[in-house]
Amino acid sequence: DIQLTQSPSFLSASVGDRVTITCRASQGISTYLAWYQQRPGKAPQLLIFAASTLQGGVPSRFSGSGSGTEFTLTISSLQPEDFAVYYCQQVDSYPLTFGGGTKVEIK
Amino acid sequence: EVQLVESGGGLVRPGESLRLSCAASGFTFSSYAMNWVRQSPGKGLEWVASITATSSHIYYADSVRGRFTISRANAESSLDLQMSSLRVEDTAVYYCVRRDSKVIMSSDKASHHWYFDLWGRGTLVTVSS
Image 1: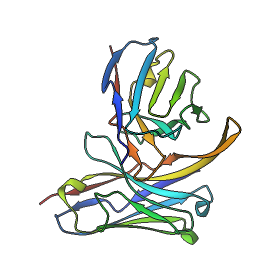
Image 2: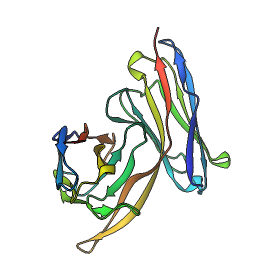
Image 3: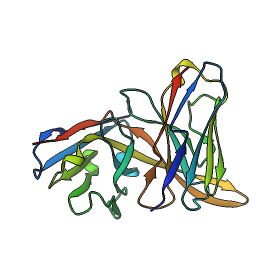
């Protein structure tokens, strides 16, 4: 099974900050990676797929990069509505797996 | 409105069974692979099962294989998850999720990329004695 390790698991940031979250895969997955945002009490929402393709309707301050085993999600200027938990997911092979999540909180 | 609505959650004892359902609307259900993803209280996301559009391929997480069965009825735009021999560790919110895909061109090579683009609100399953 492909393991995904996210770092950090928690980060505290201020509105306007640039935030970067890393997701490392236990083996190469090309660009078969997606990112999701989950706000408290809500279902996850797709942000990015194919490692760097922004889902329609997602603000352009979100961006993704990487391939192989190392990926990043960047929020260029953190907004109040971005305080949430972020998950990466590999869709390279079954079983599909998620990272452990990164909680972004207000400093 | 494009949506997925889960139902069937509740409180059951260890060893009992429960059937979850998901009603899809606003899109052509028969064109999409579907999935169940769960989230234990305060924990992360765990993929549970997938079924292709025509039910030709079905996949399960090791943690549920042999106990859970995913199925779909395209004529009714519905997805089910039959859960048996439930354990305390199966306690979670269960999400019904649509899988879409897109072909991405990269270095003159086309590759199919999947993603989970539509999620229901979830239904809570609690397994406790």
